[in-house]
Length: 229
Image 1: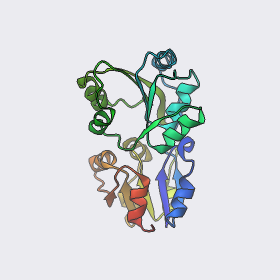
Image 2: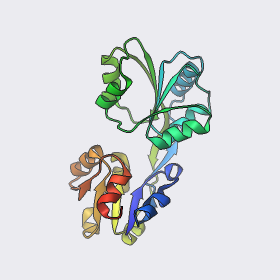
Image 3: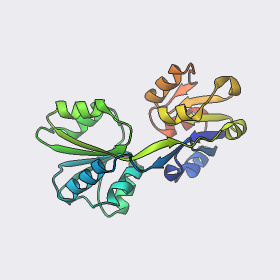
């Protein structure tokens, strides 16, 4: 199958090979483009705090966030680095640092994984999309949270009907990438439509689109349903 997938160009490394392993062809549909944060000061502060070793734990939610922080400073060796997903951890490794990997980005899972965080200072480098549930759950565990937007995401402003017309299915990988796509179900009635996870599915439903299936937060789960391995 030809499957359109919403991914930033900067974060699409390995996508084509992954889809081929499942017997499919990926059509990258970049509904967003990354840009520097509107206010760079919080990222500068977070990078400096990490470099001085004044953080106990530093959380990266994406590989792009790793690049943006390491461009400013290298975290001290005593800082425990936790990455969301193996690609983010791989990027940390490219800078010569080690990182723990957490696969589930739910707030509840994060707090359980980090264990006792009372009195800890935790930094979060993320996209310019606040996650108040995560911050609240960490603070309720007794931690002090220092978060910063490492980059922001803007709509590309392009039409995607040419890509979608060629595709047999589409996987939306985030709520924002779906919203920026301008996708209309009536224009693609015979297309299989997937949400990578529940948050994306919720955004789709709010626009009157019920996904044909919802993954567990990974592309692999969506590709498995579409056929292949």
